[in-house]
Image 1 (cartoon, helix red, strand yellow):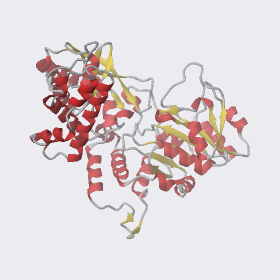
Image 2 (cartoon, helix red, strand yellow):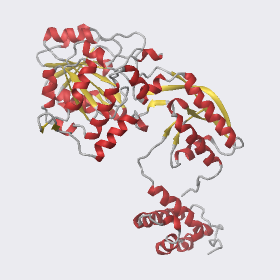
Image 3 (cartoon, one colour):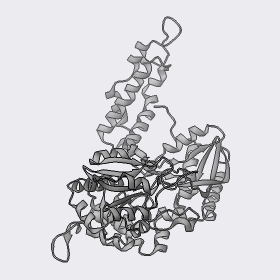
Image 4 (tube, one colour):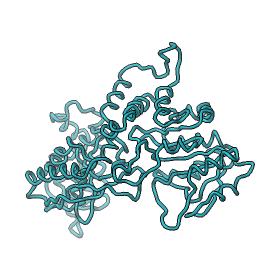
Length: 486
């Protein structure tokens, strides 16, 4: 089997002969199970890994791709089997290091939680709790009571409710207040966000009828007023947090819409999207409307996400007038959208940090990353560059340079955060190969490629992750990462 078999014409390998050279599954298993590294691995994982590799080899041969007979020998296949087994034993959902500079990165899990919140999650999962038990009366209680009072204290709202995400919050409010009726919204606010979440489609699912007013770039109060009929159930304002229309534009302030709704007896709703509790303009960003601003306007109901600018777990938060919130709570959809004990534990922990604004900024990672001064970010970049030059100088050119970070999560799309990071130009592999190798490590490192450089932005990297990034690069450049194709 050690020699290549040539076909009678063209000097190519005889595919039929190569297929016969592929070892049997049983023979591969026998060899693998004698290897110490395999001890403790589930037999099902080992078998499936072997079968998958052998099947890929068969497809490779049948597709006519060049295959050396030596590559089918057991000694050559063992490292490939081990690599596949290691990959299958790794959790599919796992930690990564975010070097993209995007703070609320939707694809990387959005906001990360502080240690205090994680302690509460551990406690909620490993112990019994008073999830729906009133400790004062000894009777059944409401899970929403654990955070409703906190939300009202922090925002000034009369009542509140939390569901599993903001799309659910928008849907249940529309279904409760406007099913069978008409909802008026500015044409320029008919947004689509990630995952094809479109306001018109959600409205259709709720049973409400969409009424567009104004032009794409300009909508006036009279547009709403002239569109009101006896069938109008709701006036809706959507904060366009994931895009901007600039130039010759105009939109109706929430306060004016609230006055119109009050005059005509029609409730007003605002979807704030990535609503925040703190004025972020103190960190050099443009002023973003806060949840407190919306509540103070007198709006009947406001919805926003828990895992964006708030910096908490995934949730959809609904605040507003008590009578309206009570109606929403009684909607049968609420059962399908309710949050679990982990979301409650994490959200309560985050909300308690907001009782002191400075504490919130210091301890909630999302806010801390937004607030981090460039000098602090540069210090991490310099530290990482020093480590890379010490361990990988032969393999990679390293520059410390200014970069631009983003808030992310559909928030503040036009606003940049000045940042610092390192730019890498490898000597022996392409930038795309380096980026791919870092993604396939046990703890993947995720950067971004610009101008044939791999950029690692340090705004989104914690102090205790700098050494991990440096070690990951050393591992890749030292050839310790297995680059076999299968």
